Length: 196
Image 1 (cartoon, rainbow, N blue to C red):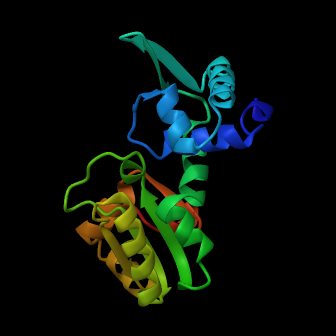
Image 2 (image 1 turned 60 degrees about the vertical axis):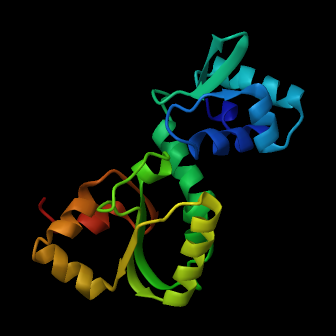
């Protein structure tokens, strides 16, 4: 199965497109070709292979074959995490980890990753550690410009985070229980000593 996941540059680009788009998004072949900047035959070949491995499903609508990534694919969550850590804001945060200061934890909301709309109370990205604020703000501003939408993010040092967890701060507890992908740090360590 693993051989079928990463055999080509085209497949990687298609995975990035599907997994960084809103959940359940349907794409026509020509739209995929345009968005991944690859030859149509290479895209068709990869889509056929991905369908063979049950990664994508297709359906016909008005004489057009449309493709979507299958949420029930056995490695869906793992692939979503890989894409989150290598593209978009997650990729920029992990790539610039040293410039951002001493980061203990950073995670991104799965809801945000899937392109689902979020309310003003939702936190898309939480960063815990000693943060170089101008660097973080530059990364956030860049991603907001690309997405043409606001990103709700929060940051705090480790002492404040531990204090708020210990006090069972409703904001922190809500952020911690939301589905998320860890970009920096270990989730088991994050939850150590926390009873939710």
